[in-house]
Length: 210
Length: 210
DNA sequence: GGTATATCGATATACAATTATCGATATACC
DNA sequence: GGTATATCGATAATTGTATATCGATATACC
Image (cartoon, rainbow over all chains, first blue to last red):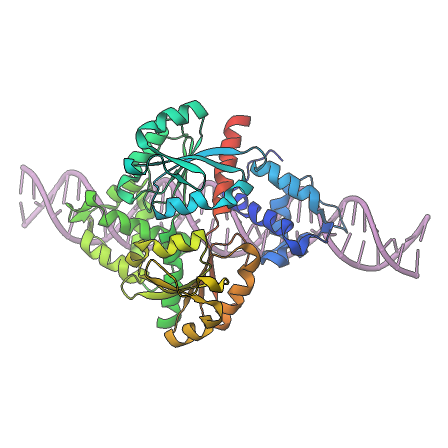
């Protein structure tokens, strides 16, 4: 239960959670790993292994208790105690993330946004105030912010990242299509759309050139 | 060169490409795998292996020719011949993607957007017309669209996906945090932000509870 | 022109993740 | 209450990915 879980498994956990909370599952009190696996296109062994690492376990013949499983998953993922975050780069993508209210469900709370362009300062985007970059360090320090979201152009990403790290940020969610250099103890999670596009594009090429 | 490349490698290729095209690399005509590895925080062996699968190879003592490498990568990734795509779901995220002009660089061209809400029909978002859902099949068929982007709420995702597949879409880029059931030959690439958040959130939890 | 060296490419090892196999256990049915 | 069965959990085999080692080769320098 305390054992460290692989990133692969970790990334599947929200998918289980999402399924368990979905309308189609509301009726069932218990779910077998086989049923879950079929609903998600996975293998039942994998489902059991994944769930074993976060949950108190299921019962033979009946399966896993849906309610308990939801609670265990949310606890493990930390969706109950909310994480405050800041976002830098109020361009198109940044604004979309600011106005997207689905993050609350995952315990993410964007408290402030920053932009290089000071003329944006003072505005609000989806209830989140946009502030000048110069205030970033101060805000992070005072509010004990641990998560930084980067939605700036590639060229600015590294310097923003450095600023975040210097301001006490411990986890960076990077939407810029570039590699970020960070100290050992900092986590960078890349949301690399170019990588996804590569997979799609290549798949189509292979379909048509073979 | 024709050998199939792992998804992991494939997803790193755009990162190499991005680095090679970056300002800081413009001056160098040749780059060693070691230099590339250091710039990206990877291991040089991995860089060589990745590049070997797409490129004609480097020269001992001097390294890889930057220009050639860029050309090979772009060819392999299909960034030269552009891929037309449609997008369904003109909400916050959908609009952000429509107005984000960075996709062109990767050969992705969104030609039309669709929304359940017919009142949006006729509008334009970033030069892309928004059309009623009923026209989707016709457009896909006439324009031979192969890529569909899903930015609708979870509950609608599967039915939109089914519609796309029925309309000839071969690759689906899914931004809804849910699993999609598709026939064998269809590729689904999930852009699962919830999964990324799980990694971040868990990282922070472990930092503070251990 | 010969030798030293940086770098590539191929083979081999180590590690992690997924999938398969087996025994254990609780429920259901007779 | 006894037996059959569905399902779990642990261990083992397979697969895939990342890292290390080694020989080959082209450039540079003497």
